[in-house]
Length: 74
Image (cartoon, rainbow, N blue to C red; front, side, top):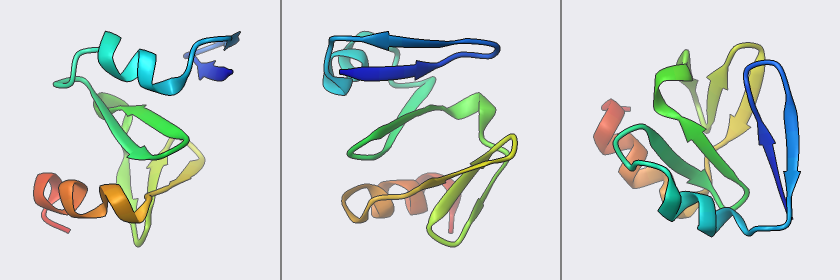
């Protein structure tokens, strides 16, 4: 299952995260970890191996690190 964290809500879905990865526009969302897909517009900054959105620190997986470094020049 997948938990979708929205602006003011959380939804539990029986779909896999890969379903949402293909459904959502790649220009607006970024896979950063096997368990996390984030809205690019909500990223505050990158701190080491974590992406900060509001007061949440989301880990960056090894598989996704090089792509994120290219996009954000980290």
